[in-house]
Amino acid sequence: MNKIFSLTKVLLKNSFQKYDEKNNKKSGKILRIICYGILLIYLMGIFGFMSYGLITTLMQVQQESMFIGIFLIALAMLTLIQSIISATNVFYFSKDLDYILPLPLKPRDILISKLNVILVTEYVMEIIFAVAPIIVYGILTSAGPMFYIVALLVLLIFPIIPILIATFIIMIIMSFSKGAKNKDRFRLIAPILGIIIALVISFSASGTSEINDAQLIELLMQANSMVEVISDSFPVIKPAINAIVNSSFIEFLKLLGITAIIYIVFLLIGNKLYFRGAVGNLSSGTKKGKNITGKDIKINSVRKIICEKRI
Amino acid sequence: MIKLENVSKSYVKGKKSVDSLNLEIKDGEIFGFLGPNGAGKTTTIKMITGILNSDEGKISVDDKDIKVDSISAKKTIGFVPDTPDIFLKLKGIEYLNFMGDIYEVPKEIRTQRIEELTKKFEIYDNLNEEMQGYSHGMRQKIIICGALLSNPKNWILDEPMTGLDPKASYDLKEMMRKHAKEGNCVFFSTHVLEVAEKLCDRVGIINKGKLIFVGTFDDMKSKLKDNGTLEELFLEITQDE
Image (tube, rainbow over all chains, first blue to last red):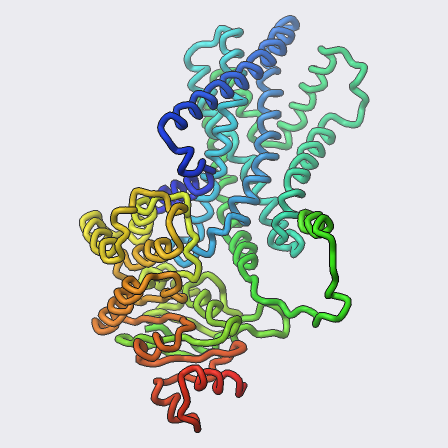
């Protein structure tokens, strides 16, 4: 456990960009913290106001609990998209495996530590996107302290399964696709892949019906049916919704149990899948290329070379 | 003791980067691994340290199979990679503490070893700085300190002298001698033939993935017709292949 904690700490520190030494003066740090604080409050404010609008509309038809379903689905999608990008970077493109693999660490410890790094990133995202809507909902529905405790626990556990799904998809791609070993190309494709997956899930849930002309309530009803369909196929949504809406600790335990089972299954599969793909990724010995011919030596303009390099 | 039996590795079908390598580095020995660029030195080292899996053959460190009993085998290895650009956003002391945690070095021993090693390599005063601000040589020194922190029995060093100043290089060579004298094993790759000649009990020369010579420098000289310089001997051996 201590080793996992140590590795997670080191990977986290190493993955967060810092300013160079010149900008690391105390006054600069304080200014940076203030700027980040203002940005955080601003973003939280936006999501708080959006949630306020939606919840009050739903309250007119006594459907405010529907908000939690929509909110959790949106959160799951966001986590999924973001995790696809994070998992690619943390698991495959971080260049740290060359240094980690010779250490006396179990493959499982490395896997857990890397998942922890993604999880912490998602917690930061949750602070920005998820805290304000939950607080607004709690205030508008006059929820008791149990609501906030359960909601906090749900927010801690909820991102794990979308992270595992995203990581699993990336591992499959990296294990079986040689094209994915091109870092830049894959970095470009990964977010698109994430958006496509999220869109496929939401379209398959909502059907292909035109929703442009629908009224707001009708839209929300459709959203509710989407929540129903997604929560049927996405096992953590329902217990998460029930846990928050009913402030139910039992439902939270259900969520925790499902997550734990999926996590263990993931570790069993991921262990083999990751080290197959990752070690394969390190195998970058000199490949035998074709001999050059007269055509290979050519004079190009600087502009063309830069364009080609970028592509 | 490090033992490689019939070890092969290919990155591309039909081209073996390491081809049926047999090698035994005994306890109490300093073994130099030589070869031209792209000969298979780093690939061999990566297989010994468990970074890469061999396609064929068996590698054991202190009789522990690196594939089967990898954790126990790795605990006995102190590895210095060929590039020291590692965890650069950490402070020197954070990196050493991390290595101490992973190798389960108790706090008292850790404190004493960190002080001893970093003072020897003259980076003690820089431990509270981020490693990205270190020079190449300083990074190399901190990596060496991290690798030696747990006082591992088997040292595996991939071109460890690169970037080191003369004093640090001298100190490291002395440490290697002392470590081997105490009955431990030192395996290192280098391009500097003079270093290998002065330091190593035996050397191995690898070329195009094949081990083409193993023995002492005297063996090497006696095998060759001309009594030339070290470079000439090396070139004669590697060009014959």
